[in-house]
Image (cartoon, rainbow, N blue to C red):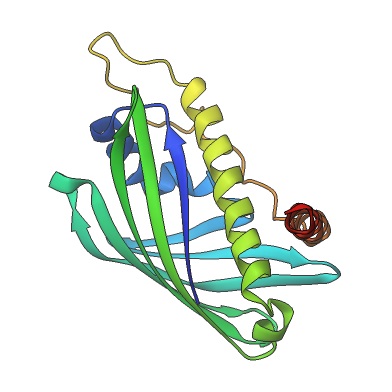
Length: 197
């Protein structure tokens, strides 16, 4: 399945790119994510936890930057992970790029995702997966903005380098119950709107 997401960063593309490519700095902003190993500047190992109703899934795997185009602020990332309890796996390829947006930047993400095993049954339906991805991206963006707000710029306008004192704690995993409620509500609103026309 394929889907698109986007979010805004309150920094011009050059500064936003530097922040987003600082993986140890931004990983704690990702809901339920934990960076476990920096293999090299393009390869990382980690875990991410997602709760779908009563089912808690924890994927452990690897993320690789297959392409990095710093001049155009674009990259392609490949991620592979398997559930810690052997219930299946996930493979994803995401391309993202930054575009100027007012005084800041817009980050555009296109994701191709394949689920296997029982995990594919838990996440059945493109709507559920898209809603989960949108919620994760939304929380990541909010956490990133909060982190940036705590780091005032230096006199030349550049951001202060990340330090252990300002690293945020890991974001909480996405709650499946609130996600399901949002999906049902959005579908009811869509049905109600369609019946009016």
